[in-house]
Image: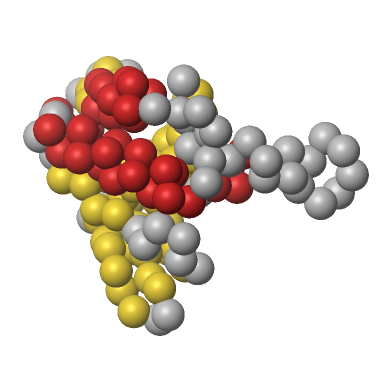
Length: 145
């Protein structure tokens, strides 16, 4: 499982020109599920994201977690994180998990994040999503488990 975690200001996600999810500030998390991933990876990913201290404290140090600043998460499914373009120019997605299993693990990750007391909004799995994002910092963390 791989996540691209970005600290963001107002971020909105639309499908077919209809607003689906929006957060005022927090984290935009693009989540890819790899073949063979299980609930163990989903739980570990949620724990890591919930505990990340990438928000500034009063001294300007990245020392606060999402819950400490009252932010929200926009969790976005992103199978293209497992695109392999090492051979040629057209990416291969053979490492990405099949949609049925990937969807279940995406939903489980969202559920586990909520169990940490976080507000989690989601996209629409498998949809053509449009995301308006205001990067803060910018701060981008790539985490793979």
